[in-house]
Image 1 (cartoon, one colour):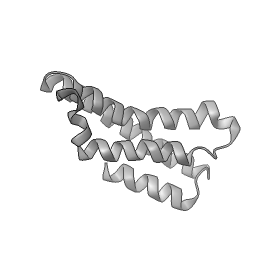
Image 2: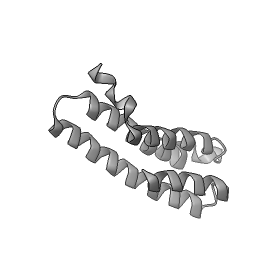
Image 3: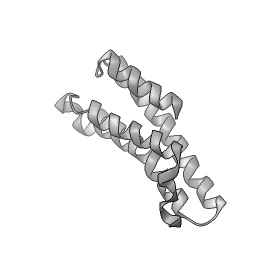
Image 4: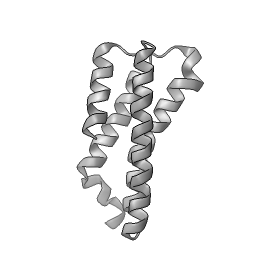
Length: 106
């Protein structure tokens, strides 16, 4: 089925893994960050695989390109938010290294 072809993409698998791990590793962020850093980082990371899915579910390369560009912007935002959260010591070192490694691979 054409609409599910994104499931076979390695790039989607990596993006999905990043979003999943971000959700897991932000569970222990302080409660006061629920509507700040936690929410922003989760939205940015989840935007990457969802835009890949949307782009690959549309017709035409032009639309695909548009959604891939949005995903790239969300990836840049996610990388910065990971960096900033790490500066605030919101991650354990191993968590940050794991997330940053996935983001760099992506």
